[in-house]
Length: 87
Image (tube, rainbow, N blue to C red; front, side, top):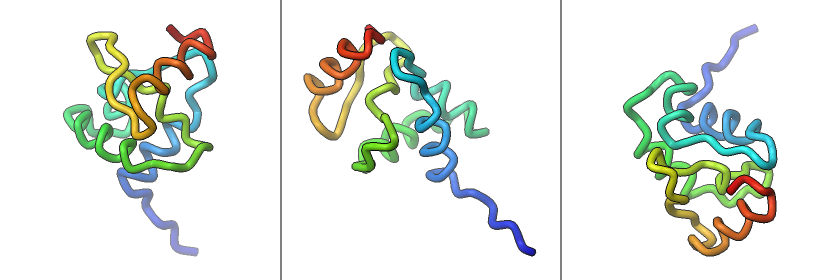
């Protein structure tokens, strides 16, 4: 049996899918967990293209504590984080 190595995108989606409600990770933390600590901008680009509701990309924020971008709008990201009591 041949095991397929996960792509960087698949690793990001898997990490973000495991962030519990009420908690956040930074883009840099996600990149580090995926084995590419300097790829935090790539993490943002990957999540910006995610429309799968099973992957809670709204739980990933900037390292300076700001919410950062969100493909459904920054206000929606903040609303979701507040509803989950993450901010």
